[in-house]
Length: 288
Length: 317
Image (cartoon, rainbow over the protein chains, first blue to last red):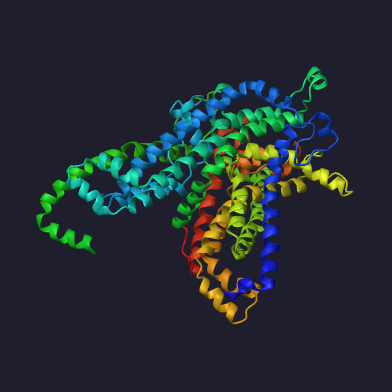
């Protein structure tokens, strides 16, 4: 199209490019602001000199944030919990999605209805709480793993991916004498690795960010993940008079340092896995 | 087609086929066993506990089985309808959700339409990357960020005072707090919707827009009469989903964003249920409110779904 070359069109492209660069920067500013406050000195923060880069660079706030409430231990526990949750979720999802994807399964339709109904009939917070209590999971780590062990929505996405594989491939393997477990493990799973990776990531993120179930089911601080610890730190940060006079700590930059530390794992992996996240939206949108 | 044919040739030897089906399919059923048990235990079994909404829970005897608790009928529902705090939570839920709808819904559509007009793939990618990032931060972190931005000494007030204004009470005034709530909501979710709309725009037929250009349509005319109608199905689906969810509100976001000064605006159904149950030990009353919300929620989703079918769009259920 010769539209590309007109002067007016070029000006339009440049103006909107600038606009979107500005929008992208504005979206990042809140994060930059927190990071820069966490590295800034007390004076600069009190005088309001900090914008989106650190003034009076120091790391005192991080010393305090890491000392408070065993932050590194909690971080390690949260990472482990996240990996465990993601693995459990994925195994459950595949074990249900694969049989339901097989066209030879007679009860497939009935079982699908049975599963899909749960997406609309949510019992609510209190019935769920009593149910978890019935299973004696309150104040155990299992309360953070089992009640959310599978998402029906993600299971449907996984099923769609398994359905996209040609049924004759399954049949051929069956005729060769492959057991269903082996067909699933050696044919269906390797062919759907991108979907599996995407869903595993979504499960991991929701466990990493989840706080609601900890408020309901957990009372022991040793079972709290980094989100809950961060919440408590933000609510009850205290700088002693001595710390206040000898270091650069203020409640502001210590809070900012805790927030930065909690964001860090996500910020590090985000650029590498962003493509899977984008793909994940599409997987959902196709169905929606 | 070939599948149907295969079936018809197998049909005469029905017995043999059934035997084959059972020898292979029992494995499929065995695989599903654990997930199905999970769904029964953690999705269906909790529904039994809804009876607590019609029973009297004794905080001094918390381990009493729900079947042994005395029935009270609709007492908690009647109490809720007389409870001004319940009505306030319901009103706040509606206000916060409608604000999200009015302020938050059009924003990603507009961004996506103009981003789609850009020829630079790099800028398109960069915008997606930076707008989608907040979607992966928890509400604890976002609430922390929001207090760093909107506190009296925060970034926004720094800018306001640099421009000669006086400090704005973003976090302590209920009206300003709502705007902070909506703003952080847009910040968190715009990237997600943006990607959905961009995908819908990508699947548009470019020749329609080109034809309109050759016929002399201006850019705005092309956007309004050619581009927008093509993504209308996506827009209406997302709109219906959001309208259907207008009485249900997540817990994390209002709970984490709230503070003691703005509870008049931030107390919503989900946080009200939490307070009544886990702070006030009134699990029966909280269950009744939760049940009321679920029932209204399901009715609204069904209405929205019917509405979308009437409008000629595909339903969401």
